[in-house]
Image (tube, rainbow, N blue to C red; front, side, top):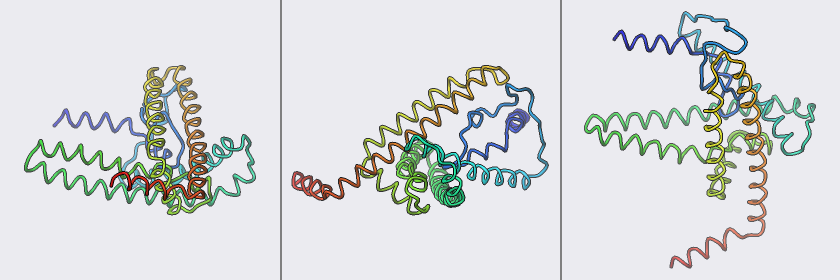
Length: 264
């Protein structure tokens, strides 16, 4: 009991409620989100002890909302720079309230969707584990595969808000349509981004928390994650243009018919 309490106490000392600024799916990228450091290259941070769970929840909610708001500005600027090689700040600021509102709605939809998946999966895994531990482990693995299969079509759900001016739900439908039409290409693109991001994160986390080298890691992480976001907007626009051309030429129906003929 004492060992477990010490572990939880040590973990609680590293929790920074401002990680809520890295709201999903739209937010500010941060290297420290995965590290949760006690120190930083500029010295010891200011500690603020939270006395109640309600206060902690309120701070996280405020940070999450602020992350969406600032993330809306960040995503708009990155999209415009990636697609047009220019930044029209007047247009960005005019569109800022709309994209922030739709990003907030999108985040709420994501939370409801993930909670539903988590509740169903947890209940199924717990119930089966009571009868057989090995079957419970298999259910957990199967649950992870199914969760990825359900989450994958939502990967571009923020992009429609910023690239096409769509509302949150319409952007989700556009993301599902795009990933279905370009499943193999999109899978390879996402796999490459994930491998590159995780591999470089291991490199960024090598320096000590209070070392000046960590400043280089922070700058490098910010530069490369922004580049990956830019690449996703370019990929999203190119794949949408390709799918629109395919549908305008009426090629999707002949392909389906040809496949069905071969199967027969």
